[in-house]
Amino acid sequence: ILNQAPRLTSIQIIPTTLARGQMAIINAQVSDYHGVSSVFVDMRDYGGDLVSMNLVEETWVTNLTIPYSMSPGERTLSLILEDLEGGVKTVSSTQKSGQYHTADQNDKAITLTIINTPPEIEIGETREFELGDVNVNYTISINVNDTDGVTSVQAKLGAFSEPGKDSDWINLQYQGEGVWSKTFTVRKGTNYGTHEVLFRATDAFGATSSDYSLAINVVE
Figure (cartoon, rainbow, N blue to C red):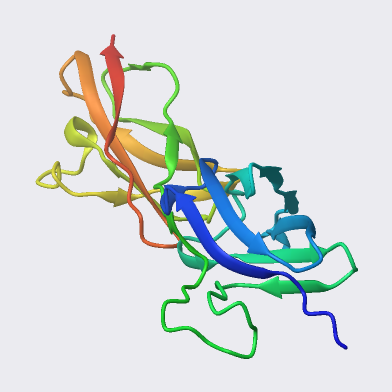
């Protein structure tokens, strides 16, 4: 007589849509004739670990923190079920019929939707540019971070743009270790005072940040 491993009869995940670093609550109903000894959520395919679930009044529960290595989109989770006789089964959907070989039309996959968050930009403090009787070149550097990798960083230079291009977005160059920079010319005749430069960044999955504002003081 073969020992059938435990069956996952129902599962609840709250919420089912969340960002990396956030937490989901998982409640699972698992049945077995010999009794269930352990239930784990297997996050190793997504760069995580085995996450143990605890039995609370006949429901296996856990708080699952989404690893930052998990890619955005709909992702399927796996549960490892083990009974007191050593029967083990890894499942990615429910088995409402109570039999692995008998599918049920109400079975559902264990899925989460991972939201893609845009890059974060570290602008730094207000910059100060000195301007005399000649044009002067200045370089602005900022730090940009994103779990999935940054594909582009752009700036709208405003008063420091080439003539007629004050509304254009200009690409910055990657310098390594999260640093992006742009060298531009501050023309003689630029008004003294405070000017605004805007930055935005896009990651490998196409998420673009909001505009970040940097104040630049032009002084004599």
